[in-house]
Image (tube, rainbow, N blue to C red):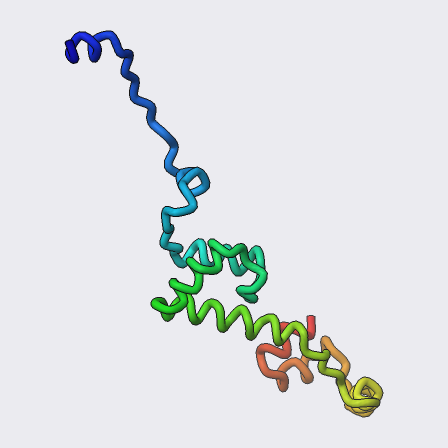
Length: 129
């Protein structure tokens, strides 16, 4: 009787694209984040874990706890953010004027004369042209 019921039941096999399995998986199924996903998370959402979705933050925290590479990526991202947030470095007042004044005082030999080219280093000859 059971075999007759099995014979009447249509059976089909469907292959699924496993690239989307994580998105369809039950929230109870844990996913181990890899370095590429962690780096992508930082690139998309920044280095502040409080801005990450809860499930991704938990995965990332587990990865950071066990991976020196993840720790380095997070530290580098924080350092880059701090550098970008720092006030710009300004040149001292009058620096451009001092450079122009010094350039005007430097004697310039006429270019193209055989005597002056012979005395110049090879790199200066290339840039003089």
